[in-house]
Length: 462
Image 1 (cartoon, one colour):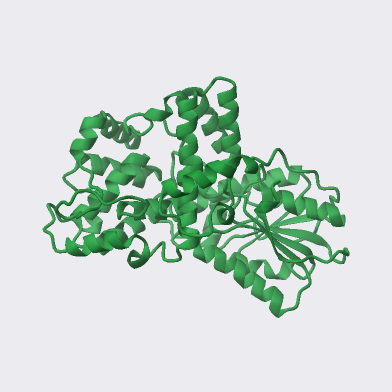
Image 2 (image 1 turned 45 degrees about the vertical axis):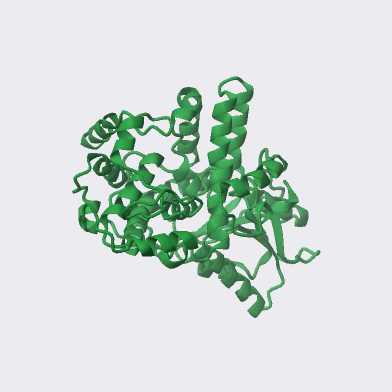
C-alpha cells in the first residue's frame, strides 16, 4: 500500500515482547480492501505474532438508534465470520470503544487504528493515546486512512472552498492510491482466548441487550454488510451504470445506493472505484458514466470529509457555512414565509407539497432518500420554518434520526450546502436571499415527478 496512508504516532519496539498486534476496527467495518487491517497483519508477521481485531460496541453512539445499529450489526456479523476464515482473532466488547479497548493494550506489541474523521471519533483516539502516555505503555501506534481513496491529510491540509479547488488536487494523485489487491495471510495463527460480550448470532437479542431506543423500526428495504453492498454494486453495473448520467432523476432508480454501506465502512470506496474501472475496461460502462461516477465517489465524497475534518464546527449552525451566507440569511431572517410548518408536521408528511411528503415518507419508511430529493427536501424546510437556525436543527435531526447513512461527513456537508457551503451566491429572492432556491416547478420541468410519488406510495403500502 502507499506508505502515505500510514501515520506513525508512536514508534514500536524492534523486539517482540508482547502477545499480539491489535487492530482497533471502528470506522472501517470490513475485511476486504482494509488498509488498516493489512497494516496490522504485516506488522504482526514482522514480529511473528497473531492479530487481534477489537470492536467497541457502545449503546450511546451520538444520535444513533435501532435502525442504524441493526444495519451495522448485520455487517459486523459478516466481518466476524470472514475474520475467522482468515484465522484472525476478533473480540467485541459492550463499551464505548475508547474505554473497551484499554484492557487489551497491556499485551499489545503495536496498535493500529483506522482513521476517524468526525470530532467524537478523533477524540476517542486521542483519549487512547493519552492513556498510553499516562501509563507509560511501550507499544507502537499507527493510524491508517483506509476509508478514502486519497487520505484526507494528503489531499489537502486545509478546508477547501469547493469542489473546484479540491478536484485538481485529487485528480493529480489519486492513481497513486490505487494500492490494494487482497489482504495478506497471517503467519502466526494462534487462537487467543478472550471472553466476547457477543457472538452476533442473534442480532435481535444484541439490540435488546444494548437497550436501544426501539421506537424507530429498522429498514425492511436495506440489509447491512459487505455481501449486500457487493450485490447492489453488481446490480448497478449490470442494469444502471449505463444510465448513470440520468441518475439525478428521482423517478428512476439509477443510483448505486452504496452511501449507507460506505458510511459504516462495510465496503471500501477504493474497491468500488476499482470495480467501476474494470467494468469500463470490459465495456460495461462508458467513459462519460465513469467520469460522472468518479466525480461523486472521489471528488464530492472526499470534499465532504475534508469539510468535517478541518472544520470542527461542521455540525453547528453558527459555524457550518460561509460568511456571505450568514450575511444574506441575517438580511432575510424576518421575511414572511409562504407556509409555516412545525417539525412534527414536517416529520409526519403533513405539508401541502406532495413531492416533499413523498420524500419524507421515503426517508421514514426506508432509511434512504434519492439524492436530488434530499436537496429539495432540505430547501423546503428552510423555506417553511420560522428561522434559518430552526430549519438547520430540524434538517439535521431528521437526517441523523432516519437516514441509515445519517451522521456522516456527506450528510453534514450536504446540509451545509443547502445553506451555501461549497456553493455560490445566487440571484436575490425572498426568504432565501442569495442562497440557492429550489421549487416544485423545477421538479415538474425536469422529471416525471409524479412517477416518483407513485413509486414511494407503492413501496410503503406493500
